[in-house]
Length: 355
Figure 1 (spheres, rainbow, N blue to C red):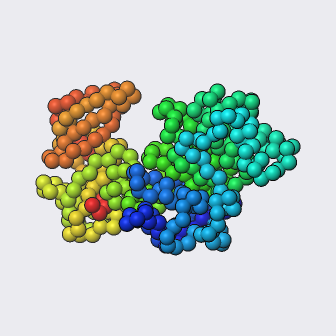
Figure 2 (cartoon, rainbow, N blue to C red; figure 1 turned 45 degrees about the horizontal axis):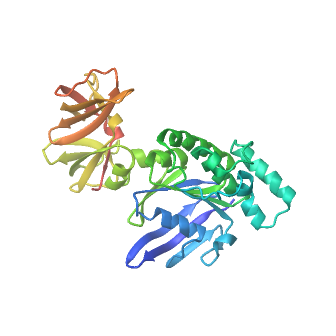
Figure 3 (cartoon, one colour; figure 1 turned 30 degrees about the horizontal axis):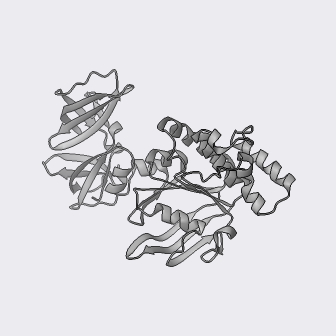
């Protein structure tokens, strides 16, 4: 297995800095997802690892080996592309065997390896079919099998599930996560789909404008976003603007004074008294009809503006003063538009960060 390290890596396209990564380490066997909006630099970073793009400054290492000038074919990294890139005129067997054939491996060794990786992706009986005879999910698995056949040190994925329909995509996230966990190959996975990244990655690298904004496990990125952009990009969030009025207490909570004079408590991340800040409120942090026995810091009277039935849950849009909040409740909870209700926003589940 091989680790990956970026040191001062910059890639430019004309006057545009596509990536500006001061330092990044990916451990051997780790699954790391680069996630962010279109144009954030995640695919450029992936192609830099693959050797398909030359960077302008800095160094990229595989383990202790500097690979700046190493061509793609000598990096022992295999990529699974967005469109699968299967050869339509070749059978599945020949597609999977392609990399081994180019390397002039013996026919018996090729046959054994192809059978092995087709078993691994749970498609042992499709070797004689052609790509157009497979479903989208099966084609995606064959693309993975072809990448695995060459026994790479590093696996690279460029939005491999984006061509699948929503239901199949949701299923394949978990299938792919389980496969990668079992393989224990260093994996770099690029996607703009936040849910996909949280399911598949051991760590998320959230990028914007070529820079890394946060590098942390999925749960930390969700519950403790580094800034407003990360909070807004990963998951559903309501944003309340204000200024820090009170420093962190023993529980790490700070008090935010909002523009309409209300106070809000949440976990402070890199903010101090007097600084402009925003509260990031996840839907599950909002509790309706809280019990009176709890000494809550964030209790407010709210007005329900919209209550939409989504089947298992209802999505609730509500206001507290000038705040616009979103929550979800069980479908059985009788909340309707126009109602006034008391809510509690759980301070320990909210984050106060720089705007």
